[in-house]
Each structure stands twice: as C-alpha cells, then as structure tokens.
Amino acid sequence: MSGDVVGDAIGDGRSQPVRPLSGLIVTTSRARRCAGTAAVWLVLLFAGAAPLAAHAQDAAALKARHAALREVLASNPFTRPVHLVSVENATDLRGHVYAVVEQPFAAVSQALRPIAHWCDILILHLNVKQCRAERPDALRLHIGRKSDQPLAEAYRFDFAYRVVTAQPDYFQLALDAEDGPMGTSHYRIALEVVALDAGRSFIHLSYAYAYGMTARLAMQTYLATLGRDKVGFSVVGTHPDGRPRHVGGTRGVIERNTMRYYLAIESYLGALSAPPAQQLDKRLDAWHAGVERYPLQLRDLERAEYLDMKRREVERQREPQG
Image 1: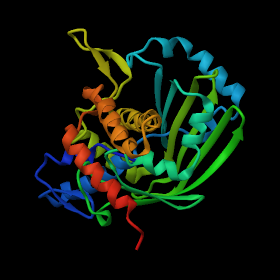
Image 2: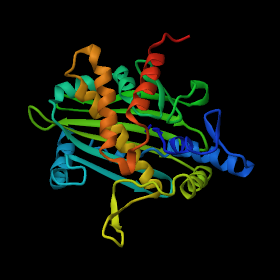
Image 3: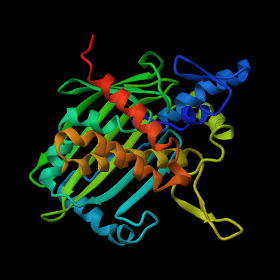
Image 4: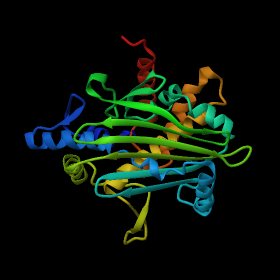
C-alpha cells in the first residue's frame, strides 16, 4: 500500500530545488525530470511486498510461525516483540512484519476487521493523503508527498477488500488493487491475526506487487540519487568502525515502509483505550513517537509539522464526498 503504498522520494524532494507537478518531482533538466517522475512514483509503490501465499492460512500454522520466531521476537534490535523480513526477486519485492501485541484477539479482531477502520489506520502514514471506504468491499486511497498536497496531485489506488478467513481465534483479510502506475500491477496487502492466549495476539502484515522493466529502471534512478544514503533495518555487515551496516536499495525501501505501516496498526490499537474524542490525537502522537524510535531509517517530519498536516488531511477525509 504500503504502494502501499508509500515512499521516500517525495519526502526527500522537499529539500531539493523542485516544484510539484501532478504530484511528481520536477527538476530543471528534462532528463532528470523524466527520471525523477518515474523514481518518485516507483518509491511510492515499492513500499512493501509479500504474496498472500506466504500467509499461514489458519490458526495452527500462524501459531507455529510464532513458535519458530520465539527467540528473535524476544531479542532483536527493535527491543520489543517485532520481526521484519524483506525479500527481493526478479519480478516483485516482499516485506513482512510479525509482532506480538498485548491485546486479546477479540479486541484486535473487532478493531482491524472492519474496512472503515482501515482508513483511520492508513491515514497515519505521512504519504497517505486520503482514504475512503467506497463500499463494504472497496477502499480508495490517495498516495503522495510527505507534505501538504492537493488530492489531484496524488496517485489514486482502488483496492478491493475481503475477509479471507474468519475463525474464533484467527482471521485473515486482504486488500487487492490490480493496476498501478509505471507498469506496476497486482498490489496485495494482507493481514492475519491469531490468538496466543487470553491477553495477547500475534500479527502478520505483508505487502506485494508485481513490476516490469520500466518500474525497475525508475527505482534504480531513485536509488542512485535521492535514495542513495537511505537504509532499512536488516543488518548485512559491519562498517570499519564496528557499527552495523544496514541493508539499502529496494529492500531498504520496503523495510522502512513496512515498519511505518506496522506502526500505524500499533498506534491505532493502542489508542482504543482512550475516550473516542481523544483517540485521533493519541494515534497521531503514537505514530510519530514510533517513527522517532528509529531516526536512522524513519525520521522525516518534526512532530508539529506532522500533526498539523495530518489533522488537516483527516478533516478533509471526513468531508462529505462531492
């Protein structure tokens, strides 16, 4: 949707000598303009990936996955029960996040299964400009810059929503969009949750999409310019001074955005204990605080700037459709 749905290039462009045109970065050179246009949208779209086949499909299988990850969930660089995985192959990118949440399955299911709640979740991400539940089985998302932006300049995705499986202790849902820009297609966002015990649940969130040569070339342009210094979370070696060396490239893009979307889910769940009138502010504060825990990978906007932008976007999202 992640193109998921989201991206780094728009935010990077805020400090570049550029002007917005239809939501894309534009430079003074025609060649750079073309490359920038492609790169921006591809980073928005190279936001995370994982095919639905990677999901457990039932409660027993997801509980087995939790058991296999028990040690890494107990001890990891996130210092909490979260595990992030990214994979790249010739035609798609994949990102998974696994996490234990300290809430009972019934509460998590009630919060995450309704399609309308997903707009309250997704709008927390700084690149999501608007989200609307068009029908009980359809969600419309606009993705754009990491700053204020008219909807006409953002890219629109139309996702079909479905609950794949619903059991007393397990559910799986999916959001699917067949078409995207720059030759991308077959977007898949999937979530599965299983009860661990009376007070805890286990979440698996994933993203997937397919891409062709145009998309690959655009992403290569971005990674060679605006995105060359950005990194993800996976440690792939050490620097000469002993510091961990984190993965870069397209896997870094996936990992950053996978974590941003997990933080949106976590923030939404965490705010449910507040009175309804206070839940929005609590979600926004929690999402920004979550991002700030990982400044190397995720720092973009100062708190006041993020809160001001998001409050306006949420207000716009609540306006009646014309």
